[in-house]
Image (cartoon, rainbow, N blue to C red):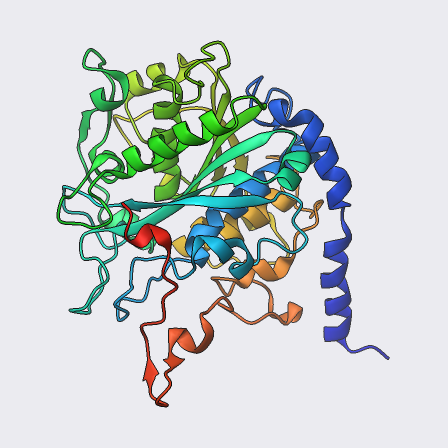
Length: 424
């Protein structure tokens, strides 16, 4: 007779049999323009189109990479950096096996701020030997490989922005005034945006080896370079981010499209699509920003929001939403114990990607209809029901980052040096 936990394990394994991913990727390759918002996702959201469901999860996973590689241990002198270099980033975070959407990281993004920000936004090491006191690793740029191009239907230039370290600090430290967005739209623009987000995006610091130029300038220069490299192919630019990363993705997407970084310099008629997939993002700008965003050619944004997450409702006044919205409700999932705390409502893996995998619309229930391992719910939470026998908070660095040196002693300063450490 089977024990109850074995039956639960069988049920757990059955959730992984939903769809054939390679076949789905061929459909995605044929429909990518529609899935990237060519018609602003008309008739695709409710009910959620199966290909779009997988497409959203794909870009959410590229944003999740930024959390899984980020060194958030303040005791480490490398706090605020990426644990892994570009050469093996996707392998180290588990995004290669079973994934048909192949990319090669080409650039790391570093950010600083000219105004004081909470530690949830920019993390500082407690070590006097900090790798960089002024800057944080803030994301990456990657380009679809030849294999990935086949699955995606075009050469995709991906920009993924890192989110905030602790969701709770969004609520406690969120009050920032609006400021002019003229750096994005020109001096005659009336658009205003959240000053904290804009500062992270546009600040440079001559004292920082990593931010002599701003995150904005780093990204725009690399996007321009990649557009020129692949100008004779069909290309797209996709920007993804969660939480703070979603806000930066919003600024970045409109900046690219508004200022023509999606156009090869000798082919002005070949303006490629710019799409932002924005998870759990706070509002970024005012009504003038909304108008400027929606009047920009070839720009599309899909906001994915969890019904119980308060972050997308912030700030409550003076700001406007942009793009289209997919509303999910992860409290309907029968796989998780909903605790009601902010982390359970805001976490990218547990609240958002799991939610997208199973949402059945505002009036429906919850049913996993894509191949997505429910063990990922517990990567950075303990929300998965105990009957599935998956450890809580299982994504941890081996020995919490301690490594043994040649003399037998132990050191916390494990760090994979990347070329970008010295080039910005």
